[in-house]
Amino acid sequence: MAWRHSVNGTTHVFADLRTLLARASPLRSGDQLAGIAAATASERAAAQYALADLPLADLLLHPVIPYEQDDVTRLILDSHDRAAFAPIAHLTVGGLRDWLLAEADTAGLAALRPGLTPEMVAAVSKLMRLQDLVAVAAKCQVTTAFRDTIGLPGRMSVRLQPNHPVDDPRGVAASTLDGLLLGAGDAVIGVNPATDSVAATTTLLHLLDQVRDRYAIPTQTCVLAHVTTSLRCIEQGAPLDLVFQSIGGTQATNRSFGITLPMLAEARDAALSLKRGTVGTNVMYFETGQGSALSADAHHGVDQQTVEARAYAVARAFHPLLVNTVVGFIGPEYLYDGKQIIRAGLEDHLCGKLLGLPMGVDICYTNHAEADQDDMDALLTLLGVAGVTYIMGVPGADDVMLSYQSTSFHDALYVRGVLGRRPAPEFEAWQQRMGLDTAPARIPASLSPALIGLA
Image 1 (cartoon, rainbow, N blue to C red):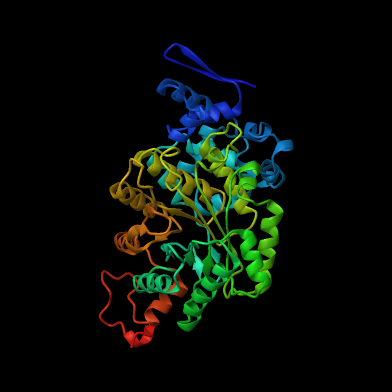
Image 2: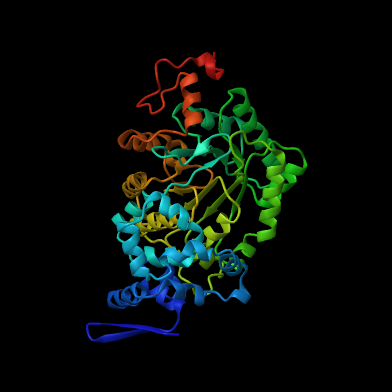
């Protein structure tokens, strides 16, 4: 089935739904690299007009990747809740945009989640300005819990990311202390291991758990190893709170990561069996990123933003504690400059929230991208207004192991300060017990070194 629209006397024809979605996407370098982007601004406008008139039901009738070829498509369609979809089933994509901006409220969006598909939320986001992406996301509330409660109104959490280039326990511990003193860590204390092995992962798991247990910190720890490594660590009795895995929006992308959907289910069951959570049972942590499918030649001709939204269907199936897009990490081949990174971060956040995910964003860029820290400040502020669930806290905003630029502990304090955001309630109460201000402008004078083991 083809779609068409005329602009300035020229009729643009879009042969299939994949083409329509790709041509309607705001410009980004990854779609240009794939050869699926609109050739001109007029073609993009025509595609957006045609997409606005597309009935939402057509997105169910015409999967962008055939049902028989892809287990993510099967997951999306088999789990779709038609009763939840019924209230908006009569709408077009443009009508959904209008409803989201004008009529939708927090309760209505929560009820709608099972009726939305990734293609629906990706499509509507393509018709939105930045302020629309912020305004609708701010209406969404998604709450999860393990040792503390993530995503409550008026709260913004921080992943404390104490990476070290050689997994030196002393370096990881020093960065962890730095972050805790500055209010980071309520989302998770999560380390990307330099070496993905059972031995290295187990060593880091024990270190983080000892710090957490010694100071009775109501948070969770995670070593971001491959899911198979985490399973082996569980088998060996390591103190594992969360299972981490990078995921994608197609079966082929996930195959390139060395994972399958049954493997993720097995890992979740194994983590649940440990019963380490105190206030909740969300035990999975997922990362995604626009461009991962294209970089693996696993995109099936689908634009990178739509494929990214499909990854959120995978995440949703496993009830995660945390999900974040590493929005600028994959590089300028996929998001060329600050403008593209800013838009992609807001798109990803909105799409994840609409699908019911506790969506965080790694506000980041690589050193060869046409972006700088001013761009990241802009995205950070916009996401704060949009109600982002959590951001990253990296010492000095410079990850010395992964070699990219992210957000610092002080950046999180800035957002909490200017927008009145607070940490997770259990973590905030711990900070007060330890003599730490909950949103300090500086390290508080009342801090007792003895309380943190430095006396």
